[in-house]
Length: 101
Image (tube, rainbow, N blue to C red; front, side, top):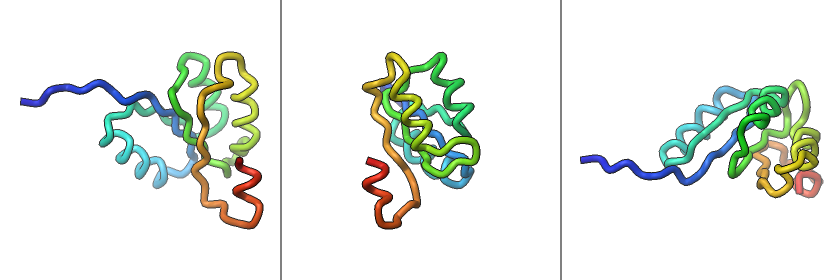
């Protein structure tokens, strides 16, 4: 018998790369998180009109708006100031870590 468990929370993953989304989706769903995906900044902002996730995983390099700008926009939106946002990025050049923090 399978006993359903409660979700560990809702994660919004903002990522334009399908391969990255597939990998993170498999991991989070296997760990019983609810997952919402957005493929760009515009879609992310649309999702946030109706949903307040427990965590946002943010790509930095996106075509319509970079993750830094989108994060700043989210953090100045009433009600979202305390929602944690973690950067998931391949940026590894000197200064990228400091800029992201």
